[in-house]
Length: 241
Image 1 (cartoon, rainbow, N blue to C red):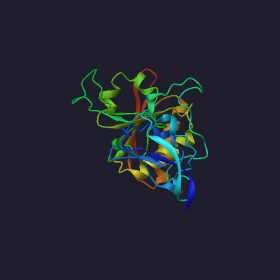
Image 2 (cartoon, one colour):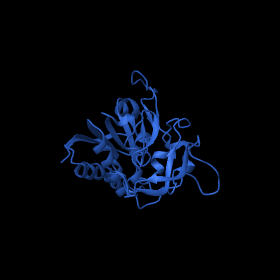
Image 3 (tube, rainbow, N blue to C red):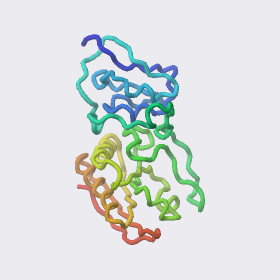
Image 4 (cartoon, helix red, strand yellow):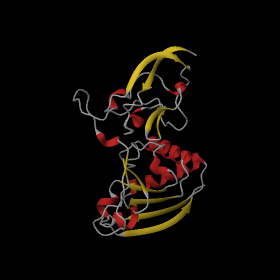
């Protein structure tokens, strides 16, 4: 224990938007009872990468007695990599894309009704501690799948927590680490994968398999492969090891 710089979260100002969570590469911040909280002093490096992501100005750096920094919290992914900027430097724009939200989807999966119940949906932006993941069934979908399948919401999404990504253009190890953390920290019931017939999209299945193995979980997994015209080409069920 000694004096060092560390983050303080003003609970009166915090509205629980969650924008600070993905910006903390160390995984030191989580949303608890609707407010951002520091998981433990020892996980915060005090460098302040999260400061600019808070629209309420609830995060400040202070110098106080705190535990020595020991490294990232378990399941934080790749702490050595700096957080990806949400906008080009100097533009003064903070993207709301990582703000955590939950809302009531349509009561029935009727045509044209949205079955989405949360935000964000990109795997790289979803915090493992997000409340909508607790006890959820996951839908891990390729970015292109909703555009190919006109009935994506009613056929695949209803009742699921959505995580989407592209194994061709995204950071695959980052996705494996994030999904592993999600599986470890939540009582996930099962995983549905919707990918495309293009060869690179099989990487989505590999991400799920690697995350299951790393987490030590054995869950029912369903894979639905779509053609580029949206038709279902193959459906299969597998088990995580």
